Length: 448
Image (tube, rainbow, N blue to C red; front, side, top):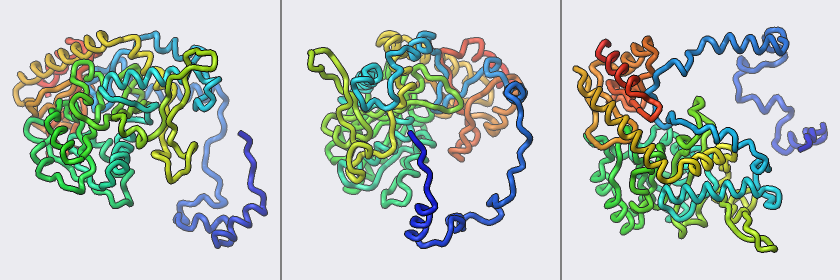
């Protein structure tokens, strides 16, 4: 794309239109002390390429080697093994097509990958239609809340406080400046969402109820009966799945009466990678497809009768009038989506089930091991997948910091998100945590 700079005449006309004298007036909202002005930046002298590489290596050495750490950190980003075949296949020429597959004749590889991604996520979630993925799980949830409003024109939402805190923050950001209202639903002593609170607070203004399962504490929610009650009142049920591997053994949300299912696909072949890029997913029932954000790839045949793929519904502002668009900010996360699709194809239905059971057994072993340590106990009694909340005899961040000395990353202290859980650690065990890792964690916890 060519860069065409503004002419002096262009600039004068724009300044006159907005009613200011010069470009500097555009920055009057920034305190003078924070503006650069005519003072040059105080930067060191330039380095050669080899010097830059050496400098970066020196900086890198200040970080602990993750391969030497025993990590029990999850909280929405999970360590799973990625088969080597993923790295090989995502580089194949069939997928080296345009980033945005608008021209079907030159984008068949990308379009088929999107179509297969949609199909696999639909099978996992038990839903009718899936879009071409979202930026991540957090923005997918925010889009789901906005979609619920488009469907039933109501502006109040009951959102479980056990939904990932950063997902909830993203929803709040999307709704800031609007008349939409979020009502936090408390959790009970088992770690599950307080369903009685939801039923007591349902009214004709509630657009949707938002739950996460497994929730942020790793607790598996039971919501099928709630779904029946919500359906009778015309309230949508939005279910978040931040750890999709759980769907290898849990009943799909679609079969438990969810109306919209969103989540994060990072567990399927994507590295933790300091928090991204990831690939969110978005699934719903067919009757709501016209209100779904983003776009969908569909299967058809060309004029010779050959199987082919094309974008079908594309309700983004690039395609239709902005005021009619269902979403102005979403993407197919092409490369990440492709890695997820290959992972799911390689693992298959049985592979996902076996891996989910392996994760379940690792977590169960960790729960039993840590529960025997004097002064420590499981905070919640609900059934869990992958993650548990450990109540500690002292502030959790002190426990976490002490274990770093033994090269153990002992999960996430919950106090920064839940002040009432300042003494609690959120720990995660996946197939990459060995029995020896868990035993070492238990031994060092006894020492602190």
